[in-house]
Amino acid sequence: MKRYDLIVVGAGPAGMSAAIEAAKHGVHVVVFDENARPGGQLFKQIHKFFGSKEHRAKVRGFVIGQELLDEAARLGVEVELDSTVIGLYQDKEVVVRQGGEVNHYKGDAIVVATGAAENMVTFEGWTLPGVIGAGAAQTMMNLHGVMPGKRVLMLGTGNVGLVVSYQLKQAGCDVVALVDAAPHVGGYGVHAAKVARTGVPFYLSHTIKKAEGTDHVTGVTIAQVDSHFQFVSGTEKHFDVDTICVAVGLSPMSQLFKMDGCKVVDDRKKGGQVPVVDDLGQTSIPGIFAAGDVSGIEEASSAMIEGRISGLAAAYYLGFATEDEARAGVGDNERALDGLRQGMFAPKNRGKKVEKTEEGIPVSQSLLERGYVADSEIERFPGVTHRVGIHPVIECTQNIPCNPCQDVCPKHCIKVGSHITALPQLEPDANCIGCGLCVASCPGQAIFLVDEKSEPGYAEVTFPYEFLPLPQKGDRGQALGRDGNPVCESEVVGVKRTKAFDHTAIVTVRVPEDMAMRARFFKAAPATDEA
Image (cartoon, rainbow, N blue to C red; front, side, top):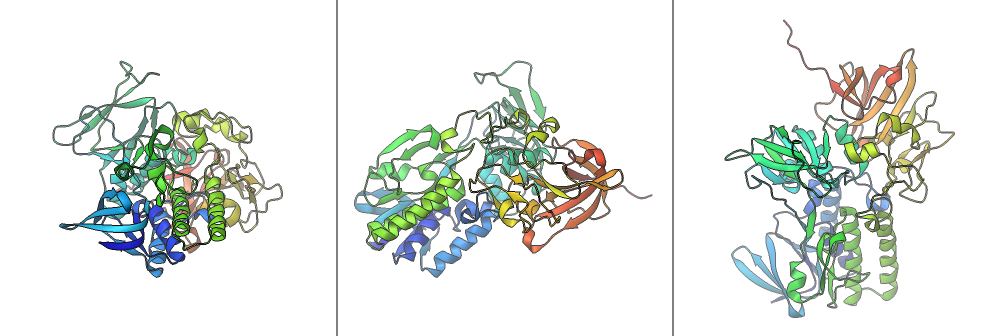
């Protein structure tokens, strides 16, 4: 039986972070993962992260994943892939299926970071080929370069459903609708808004009635539900689709804790059955720790911080870190974690209807019910300011932990302040130079540059663009509003791509002057065959 100081189960963001933190203190660490490559969900996440610099804000998930792997390799962490942990038993014995063998390992401490599994809902036809989880769609697109389908309906408007819908559009899929039985959007409003302005409609208080087809999905029927989630007769709507993508939440994979006798509770706010842990992630059995989604569903940024805390706690438990080192390191990480657990989407607010921002501004009902802020509601938000010359318009309308716009602006035009969930403000004496760094760095794609009088009768609007083919200067087409519907004719007058933008182009279009605060996206005119 091979022995290690620390065994980590799961090579995702939490597990790799725990292994790295422990290895920094000289702990001999092995990581087991059932997959053929390490990194977990990070390599599916092609979007930019929220938070601040310490949370790796405005860095894409797959980049963070590679950085973790490189650091683990430098520290000598052993990573065993295609290795499924099938048992955790008394005295920290781990049983692993590797190839055709079952091997036993012994650890002086264990960190379980097995993550979570996708939930599924049942409806008529739910077992047809073409009904897939959002995570599976991400795997197909972002790991294997395979389009999940041509016409897709997304069930679920949490962050996963919203992010994957956007990525489906990036992959060239036609997302016909976003559907959710809840009466309001569950994820970040900025995620919903960037999907809505591409033309995807939202159907809240609706769910799937049946999937159609014999040997694969050919269509889907949805219907409205009442306050008791019962179908409302006569509200059925049909869509021709070949794929139904399901994003209805995650459940912690806590089975190993039950095997070993760790105390487990059913906590709906954390996603299901989770181990009881202390502030260091230690379970009811000393020396066994939990980190990441297995101890409660959160974002990958939180999972990495929890992993660092557990790795440091394990190093202290094993005698590789002093009490002072442990206190200092854990304190810093807990402060970073606390920053992510603030705002309207904080764990304490789950299940609550937050009606006002921290600044006392009423939350947009249009955003919650239709996925976009209505034109009539925009003027009330900070940063939406009419000025002479080019200036940022910041349509960040919810208190979420994020401040890259403040850090990246070379002229310090934007201020979030020390409270990371505060709505961004445009400084009174802002001298915007139109560099576009704020537009490209915003993880929610919620910042626009507007020149309301770029020339007599016309305005220019600059927005982020992450689709192919990229528009070219001189292209003509339609400017789309926040709801994804055309608002006017427009012409592309500028396209910028630089290394600092990290693959987010910024596109500038010319529109009639009165459309400056309405035009938020561009759709090229269809190509015509020349005679």
